[in-house]
Amino acid sequence: MKKVVVGLSGGVDSSTAAAVLQQQGYEVIGLTLWLMKGKGQCCSEGMIDAASICEQLGIEHHVVDIREVFQTNIVDYLVAGYSAGITPLPCSQCNKTVKFGSMLDYAREHLGVDKIATGHYARITYNTAANRYQLRRAVDRNKDQTYFLYDLSQDLLAGTVFPLGETTKAETRQIAAQFDLKTANKPESQDLCLVEANGSMRQFLDKYITPKQGEIVDAAGKVLGQHKGVHHYTIGQRKGLGIAAAEPLYVIGLDAVMNRVIVGDRTSATQSECMVQRVNWVSIAEPAAPIRAEVQVRYRSHPVAVTVIPLDNSRVKLVFDEPQFSITPGQAAVWYDSDTVLGGGVIERDN
Image (cartoon, rainbow, N blue to C red; front, side):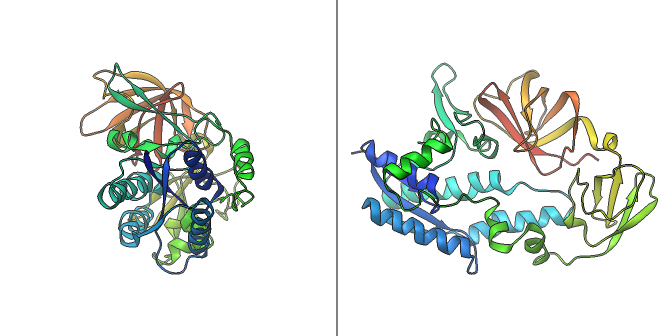
């Protein structure tokens, strides 16, 4: 019987993924990653629910303590980024380094299993001609999570199964109810695990970064107001500036060295191009010449037409057909050909 290790968070998606694979004839082993230090309520609840699902399905349940890995790769990464005036995206970093990497390593080394599965909404196919695994959008476009999965390596894609890639969220709920899973009606988490455990991103960051008052200025350096910490702001932000102006103002720059928040009108917050670093070419090998694609620069943004120009040192230049609002350093840019993820990387600061 084929074995698979399923990452269980205690939510309905991962629970349903485990039940579906068991029904398909797999010997399923449950695995929960202990990520955060302290007594994060969401984590303890998640562990209890994951253990309950394993008991219900009659499968083994392993809990792996990777709190130090999470602290180093995610918490410290976030704090360093916000301290430097960028807005890091922790989820793609976490998926590659912490979640998928740790799960597959544990499955191989401790359980002798070479396949893992999660409840992510995405699909993996194999292209024989290209000799590559390809990452593709989920059938449920509204729940598609490929934006956060662009950094998975070929080895991780080869060792991963996404049982929910062909189902909608509504269908997942129905399947969970049919299996009478205890998590069938569990509310969906609405935010980052760190935010849910700390109340808000501001509260989380204030635990690590001492708020320091500074100036809010326009592009010419004119002082318009005061802020209580550069790390409380992000590019494109309009609300919470506390400035009375004749026209709407947006954050267009964060100067952590001078402790300044720079604001301007909406036009000032648009860009026609940007640089992307730490690029991972997912479904195709790195091209020798520029390619046309559609890119997402935020999770919920609509894909827009772009020319991707490969450079050296795992970098590309993105040239948008139309100027884009709020291109945020530290966030991911992920480019697609229809529903196939071609590649992605981290948006650089525009110096």
